[in-house]
Length: 54
Image 1 (cartoon, rainbow, N blue to C red):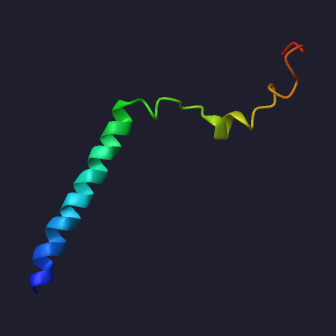
Image 2 (image 1 turned 90 degrees about the vertical axis):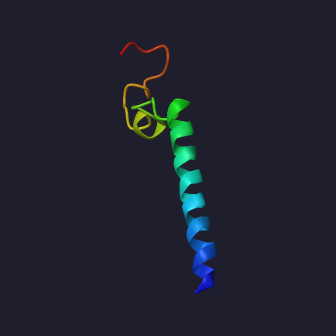
């Protein structure tokens, strides 16, 4: 039963660190690119090359 006195605060501390890390990345602008590389690779107009007009 005494292990709960150790694990409960430790789990709350880890959850708090995860929340702080999330807000830090959010403030740093990590999620500002709504059209990221995963979506950009699906676009066809980039396959034409730089010399071909779109």
